[in-house]
Image (cartoon, rainbow, N blue to C red; front, side, top):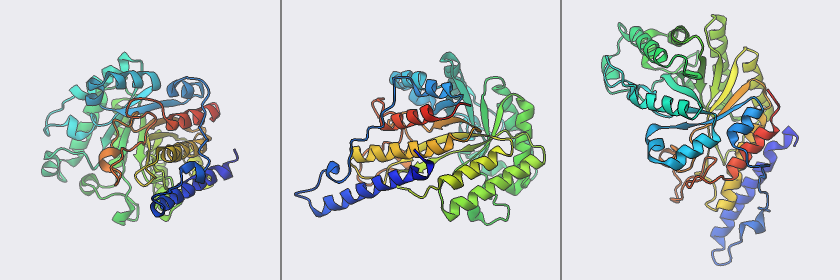
Length: 384
């Protein structure tokens, strides 16, 4: 399919599904079936039964998912699904400060070590998320940090954690979400304690410390809100690009950009040409690109699963078809694998009380149309 037509299909699908909802409300007794409004026979056929991980590897890509110890240790079905579908996993919680740092002078590696062992046992690569972030911080942090100890605190944390996993980590999200244009700084940086007490060089300091602690790990800057053709996303793309250019100009050991890609099923403002240009600009900085946290929010989509699942699937396929055309893209990770375990159940629930369905597998670990859509995107991607 020609790239210029990619989003026309989903815009049409969403328009008619929205019409279905409106007509259903107005004609309660004789409500039209979805198939009477839109041909719902598109089934996103994916050839064969090969896992997402294997399909991706054939093209020189990595597919994986975010996982956590509690869910894996409690559910053998999730274990089997992750082992079958993934080639790489990323820690959802266990490598964030509030898990690793019970006190300012101690580290608790047990939960993260469990995940590292899980990855090793099942032959999976392991990603680290995240070394520097303004959220998920322990209660002691704000009471302790000041201009005298901030740099040492940052260096000690990064050095200790990265050395602990040296040789066993595919990539680290070294700095996460450092751009926030609402803070109205000329450089676009988010006002965080790290910025306040260290200055804008805290980002470069973090990457250099991580590289020294593990010279073989891929070091990633990770952020969200970059995908759509809106003034906000356009401005953020520019700010992220400027940040990366600045880091590269200083010889900072940064290897990749992580694009979170928390997509919205009802959002149609996607410009494939503009986004391809952004990806190309990143690649021209000699950086790889990882899609680090992709899922599709369905909170504003119709409750009807025939419609909703097709819009979610189309969102995945349309977006990934554009993204995977860029050779610098080397990995796609969904933020979770099964709808049973998704952060969106809590943070982006549906108003009608229906269960959210943003991921490749349903709550019973069955493959959905979203799985098919991702499989098709991998199958159609060029070889790396």
